Image (tube, rainbow, N blue to C red):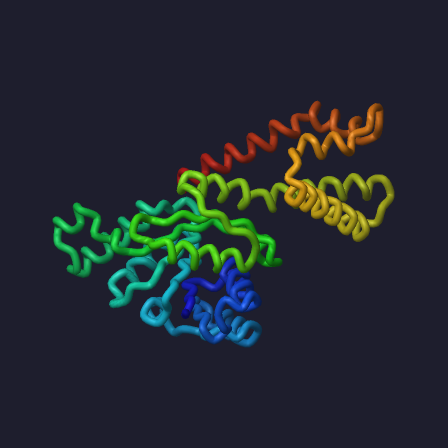
Length: 282
């Protein structure tokens, strides 16, 4: 199996690394195209991938094509590759671009090339495109990503299995409805930024109490990582885990009360809702 990436940014690079490290395919079977040849040369040297000269070459060559570009340029990329005489599985990681939108973009591109008549356009002939939509997050860079995936009606069970294997190679991957893929795109996608803000705030407080900044970042990062693993691996409700730490009249419950008084929980929920609103506008 040959896996190609159109776009070779940080997320694509992380997924390539996971694929290769897991042994899903050999490095030479991973292809990438990118506007920057320098970036491709760096990935070829570091990971052993095969650079491609164009997006169309990726589609002609590969069995799976990951559309790893920004939402703003996805339509342009589809217009370049929609009429290539090949039938790969396409996987999009562009935020906010629905399966319906991507299918319509393929229809439009093929219609412009004269490959579809008006009746085929009306019937949605681009549904012949095998398509999986995925929302990964940046912890994939360290093999701890969280991805949600959904597929269109044309994609097969084998297509979904392949997609789950690809994104499972750099973390955890779950099949879900498209509506929930949008939700995971915000919850999992934004949580790293929210968590980094939390880490920075806790570290600032430690520095204010006299700890060195280097030690503060190390202590807080480890505490957050351990807490997350505890929540994931034990399966216990977060409230139950919180209660395990908050002794009666102790220091932790005093701090928890301060967070509640300052609207910590409401602020977190509000941040997710705002991010969802933005996603729907993309």
